[in-house]
Image (cartoon, rainbow, N blue to C red; front, side):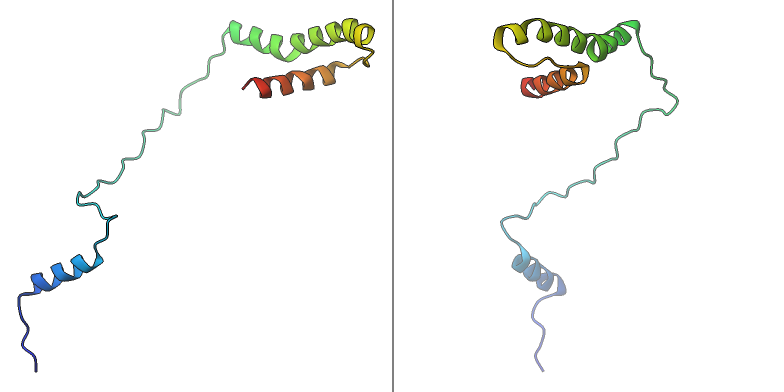
Length: 99
């Protein structure tokens, strides 16, 4: 029978040294704390400025684009006229390119 040499701690340290790679971190990392959730009783307030901006963005801007396109594009460039949905789609495409 072989006699054990050294204590058990030395054996554990040798095993840890074998497992150690360049990716190990010597510092113990603390687990991340979950982020605090906002209170559920908060109410969303909508200001009149936000309502006006929504109406202008969704209803008036495509309408102005449609009238401008139908007034200028067919006479200058010989292009077809567009409807409200097509002008809204043009605005969406333009905003995608802008961002």
